[in-house]
Image 1: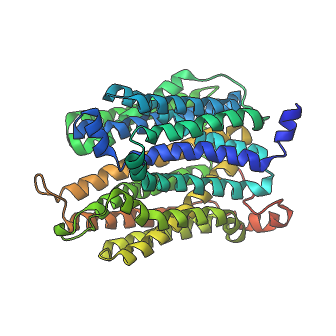
Image 2 (image 1 turned 90 degrees about the horizontal axis):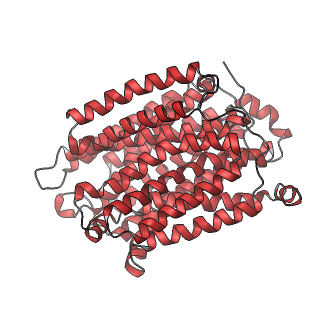
Image 3 (image 1 turned 30 degrees about the vertical axis):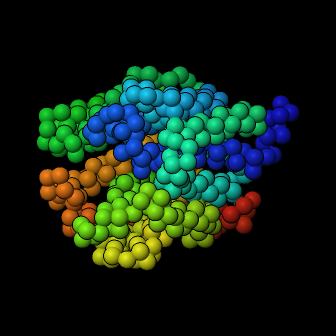
Length: 482
């Protein structure tokens, strides 16, 4: 009890441990992207097969994130946080030692399970921080996730050159093991639990429809949107989704409470998460390709892996700053208005890239706007979801929101790939028009997200009324609206 009581007064220590775990996961998400061609050569595989390094990780994260969040609500968030970090570290070990694709894929699947650290981290913050400081802490944690993803693009090339590919996995493994050990020692176990048992039937259905939808979408570019496997996967995913909702709605102990999902703050946040994921993940995947295109194609800069990372640093820095101020902005103007402003700012950034992408300074301005807009949007959205539900459902609610954003990202990336590559001649590079059309679609997608934010409940007045009582700047809990 002494250690636990002492831990509850050490909010900064808890935050640092959570940040380390989440950064290890976000680094693994992005570091492999720039070095996929090198991995292909090292593993002796084909260009089509190497994409499974990303696809396997995406599928595992999508399945594990909401389930791990629910398990944390039931059995203890610290226990699950430590366990997930150890699974992630084991995945890093397998990938670091991999000399062939099967072991690499197995490692990437285990690393995807590490996506559970996101809802667990948010849940622990809500349990341990004073009410008034929750939104600020979640905002900063969200910004650190973005920093980790951006930093992965920056350091992948130098790590490969100086240490070798295996160190792309050794370094996150060390961070993961250390974070797990320190978390076990200093992070207090959650006092808020959800009684009941795991509904494994619902978990199986959830996993099945997620795998069908994400596998179909992620492989549509190579297999063809109208191919029988893709159509079969998407139709099967839709049927399984409907069956899962029916089972969960009738279950006495649902894996994910459908009544919670019908709260206006929750369903609107999930809709916006889908739209935001559609645009942000697609931009994240294709802006580096645009920068790396040789100028001889009529556009692009012929940038190296390291130069791409440096070009994206302003976006990463702006996203981090956005996370630092998101809580205060939400307190001052209300979370709905902050999310609206963030999505509009991101839409403006995509519009600038659409019409002006010939000079580095043009892209730098767009990247700063993109980073700040997306950063403040995602940080505010995380706070809204966490504070909209009862404490005992924090993990599963934030896990589903992160999962829906991932689904949107998979769909957006696949659509962007179809649009961009449709302009490429056989064996050639896409035309500038393909990218321009793609970035225009991203602009429209983010405008749609901005429109959707107006359906969110307006809690600005409640924030201003409760702000003087808050222990620290941040969001007050949202009402549980019908």
